[in-house]
Image 1 (cartoon, helix red, strand yellow):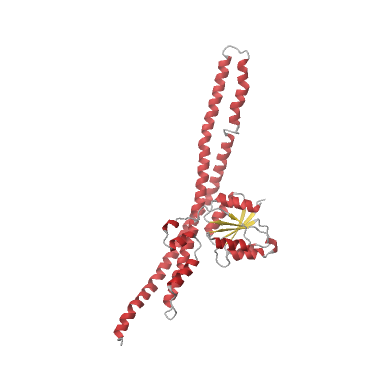
Image 2: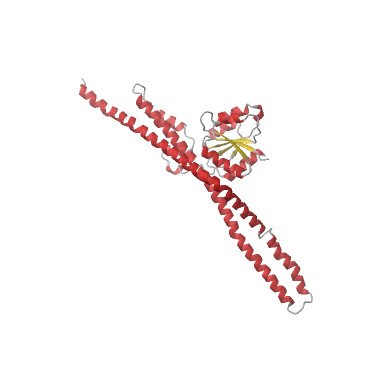
Length: 121
Length: 217
């Protein structure tokens, strides 16, 4: 059975790019446009990992990671931050919040699939 | 003592500038908003089109790969065919043979060798095409993502223009100094391209973030 990846990004076109890369590699993808909408999807369903943008309206990526880690069922959910942010300071914030990896956009699909495969293993 | 005319002459140019900006800035902001929405629409259209051809490309890639494997020069049956024929037929050359037997075996071996060589030459373009398609698909995925960067940059400018409009429209409030304004603007940058543009560093504003490695924590 295909693993489900939660993709969180306020850009619909970016979500589409991520979805195409991941579904092409055999993953199932569910989407959310911001952190709050993503939290609503953490309702007990089985999710292998999340791929999350940082700068988003309503609830940003760092806040989402912190909130997700508070949910017992998703405490160990691996989260990959996929963002245009390349500053070390931001990376440290992501790490401190509980993210497992940081990837800067634009990404190559093979780079994303390799990272997802590693984090889902 | 300053006359009314002198005061009017001193105030009018400044007020005119404020009026000018108050009129122009919303137009600039609307143009930026339109540009952003049109670039988003363009990429969405391209993505929708790519989504429909993507699976076909994927299948073509897969089939090319399978053909390449079947006809492969190293592990495929055709590569083995030549070796198997050599193994079976060459020892016969040492055995007693009917007239023209050796020549026939040599001819058969030659035909097999030529056939295998021809097939391996056929697989070469298939393999190269497969790699080329995969490379182009990868580049398209990367290219699509630049719209997201453009959109973020424009959204930031829209926000800053709106902020400037608010200052212009509130004549009673203190005008922020340039340094704090710039500092606030710079604090909102996410990309090294934005920081480079802000500082007028043209060398750093060419999508320099692309291809960064993944950092695992």
